[in-house]
Length: 304
Image 1 (tube, rainbow, N blue to C red):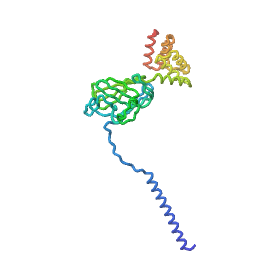
Image 2: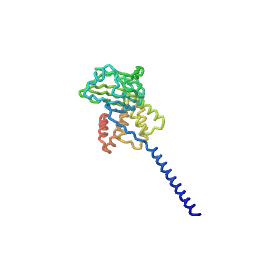
Image 3: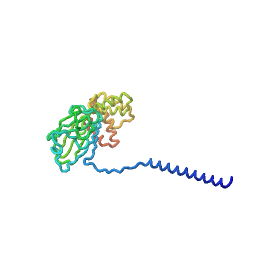
Image 4: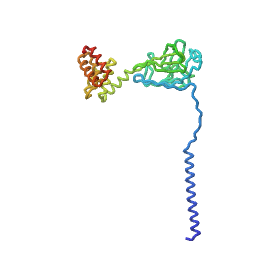
């Protein structure tokens, strides 16, 4: 091969390599442009009435409330900022939303599981409180429909000695079967009592587990529930004895529960014998609470 041709060939190869390198760099530049989104700057400021969320489990029912929390800020609230006799969103901004995981009862009315808008009509001495089936509204609906009121009740206003600056929703007087939802602002307290179907839910769970493959703990828990809720004590005893037969060495706390079931059945001899075993175990474990409980029961049953 002569030198001119060799020189031309080298130039061609160099140009080809340079071209391929340039294409790859351009491709990387394009990919980089596509994969790096432009971040849009946005100014955020705190809301005058900040969002609040509160939750509570009542028995086996979960209650969640979302609401905005306006402040007094030196104003007169009820009868002025919030007019008497007019429907209020029970908060600020969007309406207050209440969500129930199971059916609940308010003033004898059943509210199905789900979400509701919480509206109220404040007056000086009483409030009318309404659970509205359309739960996602910005304030009071312009197309208000009484047919969408799932439940309503009239609640007495209670005056408080102190001033509450921010509108507050609380869960008060919580038991395994009921709760009071408190609406608190300025010096006003309004309590809405709700009842939950705890016994129904527990019974459904017990039935389902017992129909499947119950373990010792299932029999034990079912027995205690039936005993404490004054249900079928014979069934409670049957389940407790089944549980104990499945446990290699029952704990003193378990023997304590069994002794109480025997006592409730009227079998004092078994109650005393079992309580003595529980007391012995509690002393060995230096558990003062169970020592005290067993000692008191044995005295009550005439064994000490």
